[in-house]
Image (cartoon, rainbow, N blue to C red; front, side):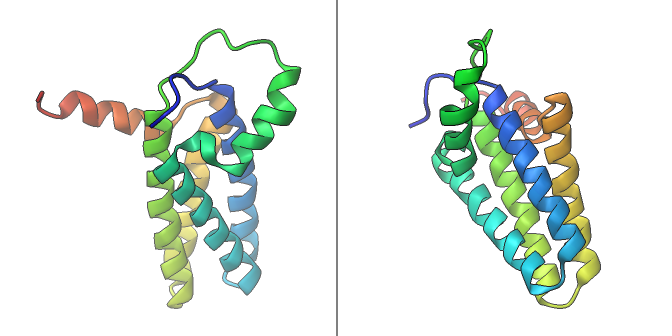
Length: 144
């Protein structure tokens, strides 16, 4: 079960680290180091999508090292939209991995680049594209 509320600066921190990793992937793939980094990022996305963004290692770094140095957050957010966003990131990372592994470097680069853009939007502007997708889907879904 998800935590009752999430400090919104945590996912923003995670997005910044993710953006750095994905930028390195774009600079190094399709060489093995780039593909391995993308595979590792896919695992981190999978953890965030299945267990919640607060279960990932970058969230732990944020909670232990960064958050104690900050003022308390002015609000807490629902953890489900960032969890969904991690699933979207996972989908792009998997497509990127498949592209690189089967020799379709352009597919790998485009999928990785799209994930990078989403991470940068969150890291720089605190705009979570996957979270917005989640909210839109919820609004459009028929009520149960």
